[in-house]
Image (tube, rainbow, N blue to C red; front, side, top):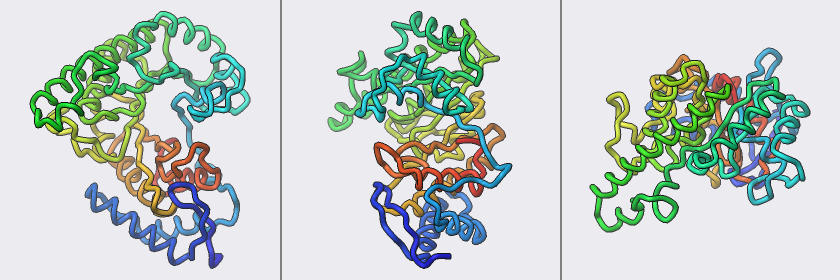
Length: 355
């Protein structure tokens, strides 16, 4: 094993570290994750395996033969035609062309489409247009074709929505009022998620992706979970993927429960259990990247959380390896050296079912 390992920090800065320093970071990170979520640390053998992955001299690395996994996505085809401010490359092509290019040229396992805002609220008033576009594209795709968007309860608060903003109420000490508006917004969000989901099911939607659930806190997470329950009742044959927004659910409300369990403070393995009980077919674990720590530290922490989530549920767990999550540096264009090391580690050590 080489004495110096070329790697990165969580913000993407290139650095070199000794093997001992990399190992120390991995040990510290797995201990941190285990302490926070009350889950097992990585074993010594797994730590050594992770050190070897980080020390591989190749720029890009890969899993062993036979350990390949399925890749799902959150609107990846949008990267072709969206601008740089949205992480795209600005190629002049239609949404349909982008979907087909992603599927056929990049050999995607699954593909998807979504509204440019990638939230369900703006989809509701134009659902007939989205149904038509989805139907047209689905007639031309072969791989599983999903429709995705974020619950994004933040859009239901002023100035974007009808409800008072809890961020304005909480500093005034209006705790009850802040909770009340979150509950009202969560109910409206739930209704919109079910409305859009059932409409898409009517034209043969192959899967619904509720991406970044809980981004506005525990009431947001509750709305997504309850919507999964409602959608599965109305459309039992349409698969639903649910993805998290962070390693634990923020307690913006603090007292919201689902199936008798408090949502605030749930870590990935508990989030996955809640999603499974709601009826989700896949749960997407999201672990935030700390920009001031090394990629080795961030990957080890993500692997520890993912391994526990996989062990906790029977449904597939797909680890989120987008920018700033899953051990990947927080960069506009995540570097291939870090993305592939995170991917290999999450699959071979974390036992992720997909990415």
